[in-house]
Length: 161
Length: 432
Image 1 (cartoon, chains in turn blue, red):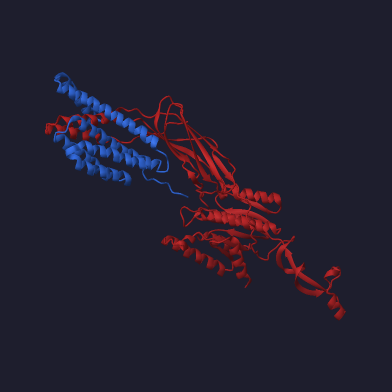
Image 2: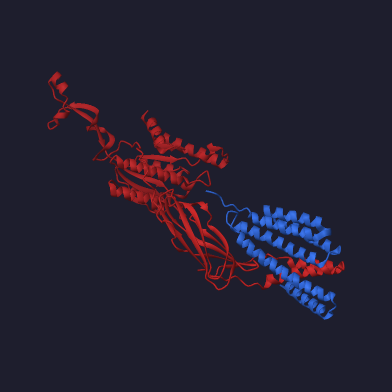
């Protein structure tokens, strides 16, 4: 009898690497830290180690923060955030697929649909943020105040939950 | 169709609000508005985690088999059809078919993961290798997720269509197992201690009126002038009950992925039964099992087909270990009461614990000569496995075999070889 092969699907590991590489390319000044984070995340996806994945995600975040404080533009930072969220989501989803379906079962469609939704949502959020950011730059203080107020309400609601 | 099931939160975006606060805080402290902007994306995911709806799709599954009565060893294709009966897209639908535990998947996978459109159907196929016995498929495990993967509903869905496989073994090569010289009246092949008609010389006795002329020793009559009659070894048929040890310990195996020892015991029992029937003996079958199993000793083609069915599909000889408790002394007493007074017993057991040896001794003590046929379940230690538990089990079993033989009970130690070889070796040892 062949035992259940619960290794993560290759496509998931590769996609985690692709998204992590995207983070490295967008972080500029923090690329080294982001690279370490990306490698850790890929290794964590391959070996199914949660702690390593957490270290990888934190490194990617630090890379983004370093790039942002060093004066990177809004588009690379937004793209970096979208890609790091996609990398983290790919990691979690791949581990979940490995646990339930294993490597022998075709899972590319599931991966494609799930990651499409994640990337789409992240892109829409990034685009919305960019529009607000641009409106601040064009000097519309009412919109800025309104956005900050809405953001505060949302954060408060989330922290209560 | 899908029922309620259990909804679980995957905590996929657990901590994303913290990431967002980190970005916003760092942005404020470093006067970097782009970081505040990055925090917006993270806040959005934290928000999505809270607002996405529970997956509530109706999933229907149907299963079909190439045949539900395959022969042992036959490759059998299982087709599984999964349909989304709800009006919304199921973004993440995963299913695992409930393959019977004793069957192995030889090709493909009983697992499937696909997004399913409303009314959409997906079909998957996999192949299993049929094994002796009746195998029931379990319900399918189904997991459906929402769009963002934050909530998952897990449930069991009974598949429509075929849900069991019944596999009757093909008749084995008959094995002629030497029996004790206890026999009944009808003519057979068991040599008895008494003289009569037969082929092998037994003794010469004084002529009695009515003896057939063909058995008179005419040479002696010519020499001495007195009539004497030659007696041959009387050959008679025996009544044999083949008993299979089908208690939970008999399902052991040193190799966790290999067949349980009981499968070899059943194969051996079937081969010996065929051999006994061939030599006109009356053969019955029983099992040491929590489930009652008894077939009266008999002969003939009808009986042979009953035996085939019993070895293939009787619940007492199920491919999976019984979970009900076995009452050792009560069951043995019940067996003793059923045995015909002139019966002898062939007990097929891996001798995984001390009970079968005790059963053999008790049956012998009650006048039922017992032969133990024991497939060795510890053989993988010869293949390089150095599991100390297996080594200890092998030593204990060897001690049981030795002790039985010392007590005068015939014991055939069936190693990793055809049963005929083990039986012939045992017969040579007994004839010394």
